[in-house]
Image (cartoon, rainbow, N blue to C red; front, top):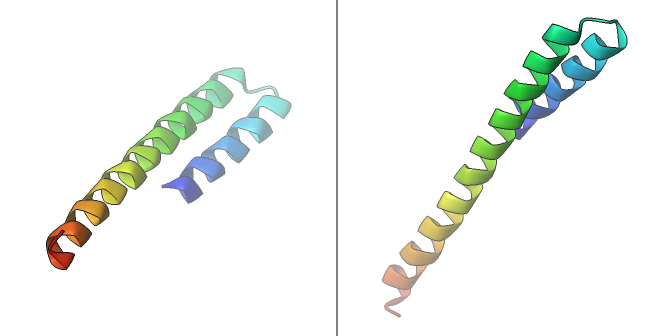
Length: 59
């Protein structure tokens, strides 16, 4: 997810430099969405890992 967010952010910068404002805004929006979805997955998997670790260790 973060890789694609970075790709879309770079595309937004390039499109903005070339004068394609509409496309740059769209790419930036997609990059923002992908970044926050990736961040949500990181938090979700961190919580799952902690709870699974407690169940395995018996604590």
